[in-house]
Image (tube, rainbow, N blue to C red; front, side, top):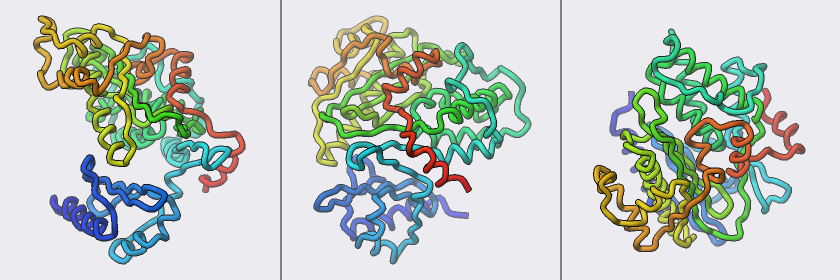
Length: 373
C-alpha cells in the first residue's frame, strides 16, 4: 500500500525532471507545465495519482528530445487509442472531441447495447429524491457507471446536469436512481457520434452564461447553479452543481451562480495570459435582472445583507471594469441546460449552441472499425 506522502513525492520528482528538460511550471495551476517550441506551445497535464501521470501532447512530441530524455527516468505509455481527436474536412480548420470508445465499453458492461435510444438524458417532470424507490442491494454497479459517466461529460456537456444529479445519490442509490442512469445511457446510445466541436475563431472574446434553478432539490431545498464559458465561438468550460447553502430567494441563487462563473472566468483569464493569449474584459450573461443589478450596484439591501461578504468580490470586478454583466432573455440563456431538465426541442436547440455536433457521416464507419474488438 502506498503512503499518504506518495502523490506529493511523485509530483516533486516529476516536477524537477520536467523543469530540467525545459518545461515551465504554471503559476496558475501547479499541475500544469508548458513547453515552448519555435512554433507551438505544448502543455503537460499532471493528474494526482499515486504512481502515474497523464500527459496530453501531440503524437509527434512522443519522439522529440524532451520525451526521449524523460523516458530514461519514467515509463511512458501511449494511450492514444483511448482519447481521440478527429479532424474535420481540413486538418487546420476544426476538430471534434469524441468519447466513443468509453461509451461503447460502458454500454456493453451495463448490457445496454440493444436498449431503445432516448431523445434526452432525463425524463421531463421527473425530479429525483433520496426518499424515492427501493435501496439497491449492491450499489457498486451504480457508482462505477456514474463514475464513468463523469469522464464522458468532458466531451459531452449536454449530459452534465443529469450526471451531476445522479452523483448526488452515490452514498445510497435507489432503484429509481439506477433507472435515471439507464436513461442517460439510452440517450448516449442514440447520440454516440456527438462530440464537442472546436474551430478557429475570429476573436478571442471571453464570455460566460450563468443560470440557477432556485430551491430545486427536494431533499434540502438548495439551488442548482450552471454556467458555460466560451472563448470566441468555442466552449471551453462548463459546470452544473448544487449550491452549498440554501438561498432565500431566486435572486440570491442567481447571484451565487454569477459569483461561481466570475471565479472561473478570473482563473481562465490568468491562464490565458500565461499562455500569451490576452483577452478583453469578459462578458457575463444573466437572465435575472435583479441579480445583475445586485452585482453591479454596491448599495446595501436589507434582503441581501445576509449574503457572505466574500461573494461581493464580483462588485469590485464590475467597478474596476474588469468584467461586464449583461442581460439575456431566458429563451437565449445557454446555461439553462445545466440547471434543469428541458423539453426535447429546447434541449436540442441549446445543445447545438453549445457546439455539441455530430461527426461527419464519412467518419462513422471508420470510427466503428477502430473501436470494435
